[in-house]
Image (cartoon, rainbow, N blue to C red; front, side, top):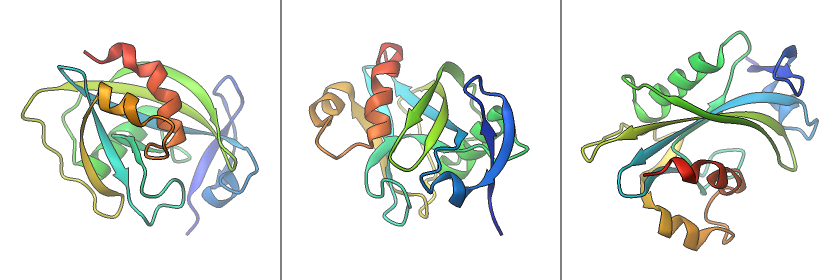
Length: 167
């Protein structure tokens, strides 16, 4: 069964729909995604290592939660669904940071960026199909590996937009 994503204009308005395959084929059809960053006091950011079976950026460290908005689903519904599916999070109160358009060699995404702040006892239940590993990184550690192929290009670009929200 095909998975469908909404197609957007640059103002974020839905103008159609397309399959995942069409969106990731180099068509550059603009489609929405959600990112949830998880911060902990002291300058820590929770990152996930993408599973090796992922079609985009396998084995690289990325945003704590990220995923596509399905056709007929709101951005907020997608955010809560992805947080539940990837990390088992159900009781969160995300705050919006920004929207922006990200271009890679094969796709174009309207990225909807949110964050939450958690305490020392934060725990997740990681989806082993999506995530190989997850842990907190200190901002100094992140800045040392930028540009070295360890982090996804999308996260590296987004980091400059979110680092001011990290305590």
